[in-house]
Image 1 (spheres, rainbow, N blue to C red):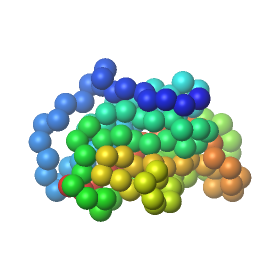
Image 2: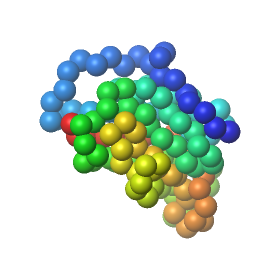
Image 3: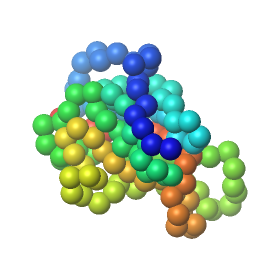
Image 4: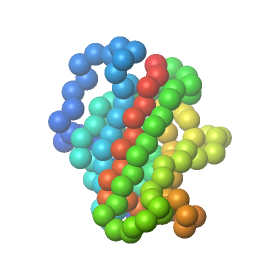
Length: 126
């Protein structure tokens, strides 16, 4: 499934920015029908394919030099084979861009991309 998932119904509001606050963040369901739970400075989530998404920023960054952290979780599986979030390679369709950040989610040991019920992305920069 592919497409943009709007955050128009999000509860978040832009209340200012400092170096101590995230410039953008999102919590979304990345499995099945992708749905944003809550966000800040995120226009939409683009669902490219299984385990591959982009966060589209509501207000673009001035340069591609920002910091991203991510976390994914699932209710299935066990042991040490946990979920991971990875940025994609650069170029004009992936990685760090002023208007979006493209990433993949996968299980640590399985190698293949996977959709997860809980995906969280935080971005710090300007």
